[in-house]
Image 1 (cartoon, rainbow, N blue to C red):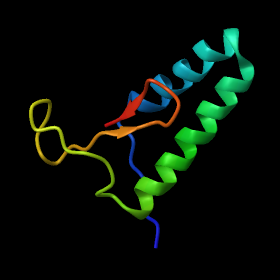
Image 2 (image 1 turned 60 degrees about the vertical axis):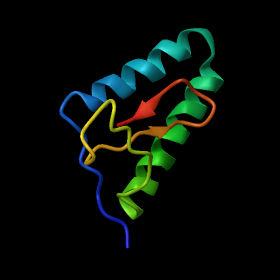
Image 3 (image 1 turned 180 degrees about the vertical axis):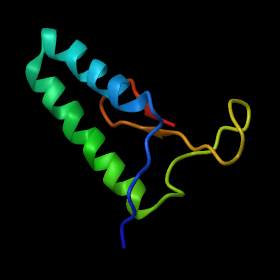
Length: 75
């Protein structure tokens, strides 16, 4: 069973800005980023404990998930 992922209020705009920034130079890479973000969010909905804890950076309730092929993290 998959749950809905609740994004922080600023997250949708941050994600759009990242995709738009990449699209200026490489529209195909921007499409790949969008697809990988959507996949990661679906995976998080199915498994909320996904990602690594980074106790030196944030409380244990936060997890960090790298976006494959891109220098971005979902936190």
